[in-house]
Length: 181
Image (cartoon, rainbow, N blue to C red):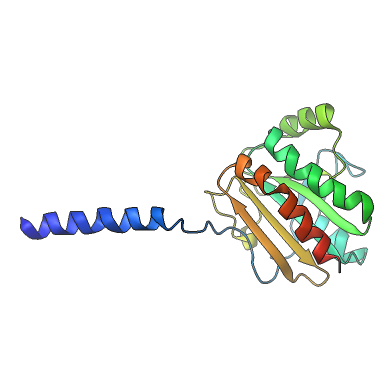
């Protein structure tokens, strides 16, 4: 009986400890991108087509790209996309794309585009939960992968909520700018 109580207390303390230390959420690749994957473009010059933006960026010799994977399409996401749009507008060689996963629908992105007129293409992943090779966490509402030519990840961000992502929008934009150098 005493051993059971001790074990229960130890489990509670271990759980509280992991919450208190704020273990970092991990989602997406941190060393090298997972490679090619297909999306359906909802907005942008390729709207209505299924394509691989990673392949497109590589074929165009872009020095850097930003992949924004999201499980939610809301105004907080817009703040992140607008920050990246700002970098892309002054650095046309930066590749940018938003990839809706885990239930984000074309209609969600169409509504955002109508309201906010975003530059970055809004797409929906061919694989509902995103490309398997990218190891996206179900706990991450937003995963941002900034990578350089050749696929080397220069910065990876994972956020439990779109609000947390919006609060780091300027940091994401800075990482995109740094990747271009």
